[in-house]
Amino acid sequence: MTRRGAWNTLYKTMTWFQWGLGVTAAVMSASLGVDAGKIGQSWNAAGKVVSWIDAHAWILLFMLLGIGLVQLVRKLVGPPFVWETIHRLLHHVRDDVFGAHADPVQHHRVTLFKHVRWRWRWRFREDQPRRSGWLVPVERSGFTPWKTKVAFWVPPNDPDAAEGVAGRTWVTQKPCEVSSLPDLRNAPIDQNFEDYAKRTWVSVEWLRREPPDARSFYGIPVEIGGKPWGVVVLDSRRPNLIKGDKSFRLLATVLGKLLERT
Amino acid sequence: MNEWLSLNPDTLLQLGQEAGHAVLPTGLSTYDFPEAVRSYQDQRTKRLLIEFKYVDDEPWSLTPFTGPVALRIGRNSKRLLGIELDVSKSHEGTAGRETLLDGIHQAISGLTAAGGATPRDGNYALVDRVIGNLGRNLLASTTGQ
Image (tube, rainbow over all chains, first blue to last red; front, side, top):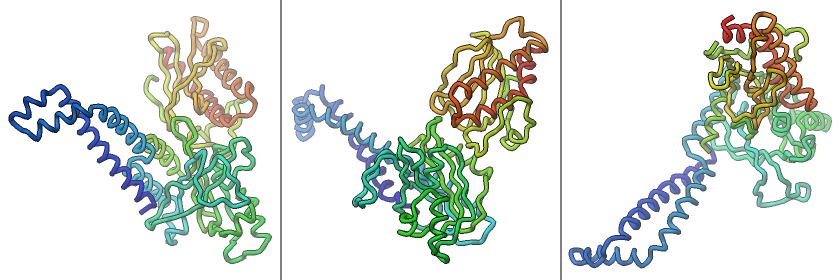
């Protein structure tokens, strides 16, 4: 279960809409050369329809344009089966890496971040002016619906300012491992916040807004056709659990092929 | 060796490093590891080709020949996807093969030297390591020597 439910509905609606437009355009095109008078002699209603189509043939142009636009929207949204497969893949990777431990599912997570140039936000804080280059979460392992507004800024002209393990993974395009982080929930002292912030490339203020539970991270770059696409970040509430795993290779292989379809 | 020879990432990391070959940097990306290698003679160009297969495919560009060696570089990732060898009679025999291998090593080293430290140094070092360990077999099977 993910927050892509609305997108999946949009994709299916667009598919039906495109199909309807295509059939209508084909029927209209086929009836353009037909003699409306002749048809009207045997079937009056059909004759009127053909006559109307002849008089409004310009609509065909807009219908063809509409088919193209709908295809563009479908491409941007991505097929539901691809995202469902990616979700299952992330969950299997989570089970492969953390499966031996009988911890609750939310204690160990695998999140896919996509790099986008611009990010829509309803509200802007004074300390976060409009900036370009973001890593936004698009899918996460687990069975329950998830909602996170956590996105990481990766300024295109200042790699050193990239935020978080995700940002660090993005700018280096190499795996990034951080472990043995302080427990901010149970020991929220200033020194721990400073240590955590320094080692995860975020500010103390950023951490204080919603102190994370994770105590270890592992970031993996994701590419499509040799071009950076985003990153996958594994996080765990255990301090020393995430290690380079063979399933990361499978993840990279399958993820790239799936994301090509979106 | 026209067929692909599978390369295990763990084995690649453990392969003995040839003297003078680049040291592997830490934190290599999954995408930097070649999954397989093969060599064959291109009937059209008459060149010997050594190709590497990766997790992902991408188009490539050929670098200018340095002696008998040119490198196929991924247009997007800049990874080393293949090696083209313009061989002549002087490259036959054991000594000729060693000359070719040395030329390949120099060409790969040149990739790093030309641009300073690059994000693909790990990939170049891995390929250099593969050539150092399997290069003789790859060339011998292709030339039938």
